[in-house]
Length: 376
Ligand SMILES: *[C@@H]1O[C@H](CO)[C@@H](O)[C@H](O)[C@H]1NC(C)=O
Ligand SMILES: *[C@@H]1O[C@H](CO)[C@@H](O)[C@H](O)[C@H]1NC(C)=O
Ligand SMILES: *[C@@H]1O[C@H](CO)[C@@H](O)[C@H](O)[C@H]1NC(C)=O
Ligand SMILES: *[C@@H]1O[C@H](CO)[C@@H](O)[C@H](O)[C@H]1NC(C)=O
Ligand SMILES: *[C@@H]1O[C@H](CO)[C@@H](O)[C@H](O)[C@H]1NC(C)=O
Ligand SMILES: *[C@@H]1O[C@H](CO)[C@@H](O)[C@H](O)[C@H]1NC(C)=O
Ligand SMILES: *[C@@H]1O[C@H](CO)[C@@H](O)[C@H](O)[C@H]1NC(C)=O
Ligand SMILES: *[C@@H]1O[C@H](CO)[C@@H](O)[C@H](O)[C@H]1NC(C)=O
Image 1 (cartoon, protein in one colour):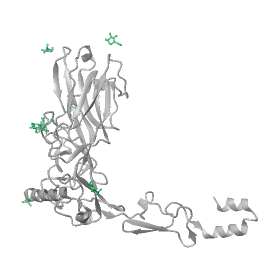
Image 2 (cartoon, helix red, strand yellow):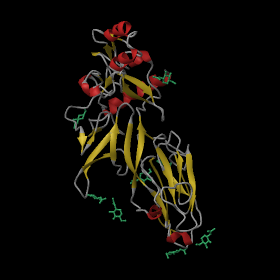
Image 3 (spheres, helix red, strand yellow):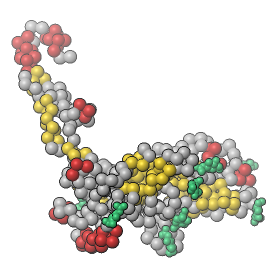
Image 4 (tube, protein in one colour):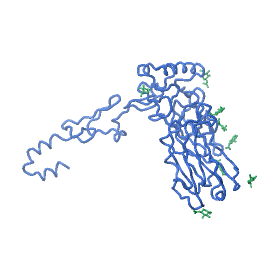
């Protein structure tokens, strides 16, 4: 409670200073290229919830195609998708970190992944969706949460990494990322940046087949090791999922407070609810059960009742009888002349009242025939 009151004050101050809009203006651009930009994200100063949610939309140099990037990041971070509900996730492309060597062991070239994507604190690296991968033939690499100086907002709270070795050019195998040429580890929640270090291990004959060490975060499902990657392009990027949240308070406001929609509270839709963030402080919003839409905006754009009876929803919301949509839910009952059987008409066909009666009268005569006729 105390947290929230303090946060409330901060938000009031912040909104006075930055004019954080509660809603996007109608004139705001809803797409960039073929990517949807739902609020609280937005393009331009008055279209998003604020810094961290701002998306830049610029033409790509070679093709001229419009591509969204995180505006608050200090490098070019391409956005692949922005998901608002039910789970708040953003998919971005992050650069691969590397360190390359001459055979005399001195370093020719390096990049340690320093991209400040998180300077407004909105994002955390998804621990459920990503892994940390290290590639090389005498390589220790680890990622840390921010700054090795121990200063700054995300100073070193977390360290994780692994060791990879190969003695010759043929020992690394495609699809095998278990310590020979490639290793990978799960990451912990709470990582807000990816600043990589490489162990100072001696390099010699390996530079012929493994000239560089690489490490990167990547979607667990989207990377499979190839031995050719021991010589991968230095400018490669990898798909990474970020969890985002409203971080200007530590948790959801208490139940009595949520309904009043205090200044700065993000769950604007009447049919939305607040969920505590599971990766970092803060909260996110989702539509109440039976509703669908954007919980961060109100009125028509917000969470709307799902018509479970619509033909297109039949698979997800089955009804073997007469379907009736009601706010937040649906009813399903058996047609006249039919009755509940088993778990009811949402789960299985209603049974006709007639054949049951028929069975009672006919069953004694010809049970075999009856079953063939009625019980298919
Ligand atoms: C953004 O909002 C500010 C304050 O409300 C206003 O002065 C400014 O004109 C707006 N800018 C745009 C591009 O709409
Ligand atoms: C893209 O174009 C801009 C301006 O024309 C230039 O400054 C930038 O270096 C180019 N980027 C790449 C990756 O070629
Ligand atoms: C972004 O910020 C980090 C750390 O603050 C810095 O090391 C890096 O060089 C910056 N990158 C760019 C492209 O400005
Ligand atoms: C290592 O080799 C490179 C390229 O041949 C050379 O430029 C560099 O001075 C050498 N470093 C040392 C410490 O010998
Ligand atoms: C790392 O620490 C330095 C020195 O305190 C600070 O200037 C810099 O902003 C910090 N970087 C990050 C990413 O926190
Ligand atoms: C490791 O590689 C070196 C150089 O190719 C070779 O001489 C040596 O026999 C290899 N060791 C093992 C254990 O395979
Ligand atoms: C990456 O570098 C290679 C050459 O090293 C170049 O051919 C390629 O166009 C570069 N890709 C990007 C996206 O800059
Ligand atoms: C969020 O976390 C706080 C503190 O742990 C707890 O009191 C509150 O009930 C949680 N709210 C929700 C909606 O889970």
